[in-house]
Image (cartoon, rainbow, N blue to C red):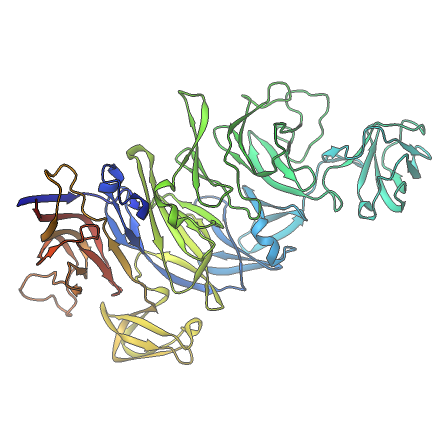
Length: 631
């Protein structure tokens, strides 16, 4: 009979799939767990009960959360919903702007920001520019390209067959333009044509072969010519899919009818897309040509201009980018989702993006040794947690990538490449999370709780969801402001102690005895379930195993509920001695050792677990097990 001592020093592999139960030889097996729910995993290895969600404001319904950061001090949360953008500063609504996007269109919007301007794209809606001119002064307008007189420096493209000619009836004023084949559509009314480099505005569509137009510049002549094109973006041809700012240029990535094309503005002249004569600072336009025509889903400014398409990832290089030296190289063949827009995010120099199959989070990272990008799968060990992501954002302070899943779950990925930390955990709440945004140091979530939508914020001082905190100078029995939880049973922490649940009626709860400081909200449970013990290297194999004792190293913990084989029990944390004034025990840091009884023949099951409903702080740093093995 052998005595074995195992120390689990960290949880830096996070929750891993049951399909790895036979891989006790992996380092991830030593550092992982079978279940880590409602916990934040620290890059240093410990786990902490996740922060609670503070209630911010009711939401209009489903939508997207977008961060707007003018500088480190002036940050705002934008809540996109059907037909509306609501602006929040310091959790307070400060403006509301009418918007053109419908609820079904919101999953496809993309955005990018420069200073006080946010550009928003959707392939079926003219792109918009949200501008902040003051703390409470916001305006949503269309894109405006540089104009020189009547000439507008917008992108143009030849959609029609190269053999089709146009014949203008005159060279200035109102003219009739006749095509040699059907190329016109009523949706082109108001759009621009260009004949031999001169622009016209379509005033009316007479037929598929004839329009009336105003010559905005004097035309070269009235002879039939094949040298013509039309504006790239229009109600007929669709609108930009994505945009980014890179090397002092505005980059437009793809449109509805030109899905694999890129447009780069003139250098330092963001709204000028005039190609000119190809000088170094002039605009650039090109299509991504490969064996497949893959639609651009996002453009991202990193070490290089990165292009994410439906079937591959590309690097656009050139230092600086000019019409003469620009190069496009395919790097990987992963692809991005086409039915939704999930923004790529920068994490320590790598770009994290969602794969086309919806089961992977890839790390697009440039390696100097290969002089190319790789796209490692960060969800390989936790495939069961990744379910068609619909939104994501990165919290630099906690080193957590928050990923919203299609099923309403919110997963948190701890990433610290220097120490090879990739750790997943699933965050669960009484409801479904639909969007997430990191604004400065704050993380916001859009939550659907049984049809009641709300904007909520992670708060390290809370241990409840949809929570409100109140203070009074003297003991108070009636606490109001809980209208968003009307009719719900809420958990209550009053003056530092957990009280019995209370039911919200008319937005109020009643406490007996009264309290001065109250936190009320929806409860959630955290859970730790380790992997079955791995006894690789034990001579002769094992027939049965006995857990002798477990030592938990805790930090600033108020409660510990563990199951060592005899059911879940609340375990004492405090030594005997005088209690602090007020009756609220101090948080505990240090080791707590618990003894266990009984042999286990089902060695494929965990020997212990932790589950806690109590809304109190909990941090676990390491676990030490003493075992007896029957060999």
